[in-house]
Amino acid sequence: MKIAFIGFGEAARAFRESLAETDPALVFSAYDILFSSEGTAGVTAETARTAGVEVASGPAEAVADADWVISAVTASSSLDAARSVADALKAGQVFVDINSVSPARKQATAELVAGNGAVYVDMAVMAPVHPRRHRTPVLVAGSLPDPLVDAIRRLDFAFEIVGEDVGSATAIKMVRSQFVKGLEAITVETLLAAAASGCFDRVLSSLSASYPGLDLKTLAPYQFERTLKHGVRRAAEMRESATTVNELGLEGALGEAIADIQQRMGDLPATDVDADDLEASLKRLLDEIRR
Image (cartoon, rainbow, N blue to C red):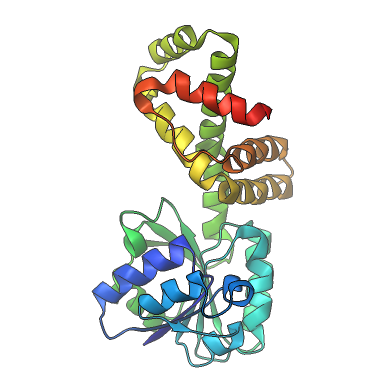
């Protein structure tokens, strides 16, 4: 069995690593847009090559003889990624879309993929890919033939089928993300404001007393770490979440505001904070934000 990755970032690398452990006979290929900008001798391609992955010079080459194609790109690029391989796909192939995008985007992608008879899988990854890698809990939706479900089970995915309609899986993730990424954003913005106004200890103590179940003294450094390291990617996801909410006839402005905070944090040069001296770390972040 051969699996091709379109996009070879964190999620694809994590999936490949544990899939290879699960079934050493698996063969992998990949194409990432960085293979073109950096060249096939560049850092990203060399990372793939070192992992035993065939480095393709283009997306069509990557998927040419693959059984599965796993699309793992940035949210904003998911439809372009599908377009890049649509003409090369054929009946019998499976296109697994793990991108964090709106139901409408996945439905549009499914139409492209189905044009040449490939099977489309709406897969939503419901937690960070580390440490469980491809065994991270996922939701799947679509018209899935029994042999495909058997293969997903044999490869030991931690999956739950949530429906036959494409978009059913990603809808759950997009709506849930508004809370998860929103909690990060409100924690970040509140504690930065507390540090800026000189009332950090009082605000943190008051919130900790009001919401003891959150364990903010432990949670807050983690929330900052997630936004600093992954804010750019999470911002793209939140814009898709906002689109999802708008498509439901509700107000997506909250998702857009969350995206703005995630983007701002992700654009900062810092990547972590000192949990033992959080206030001092936040003051340093404030200096970076104000530059």
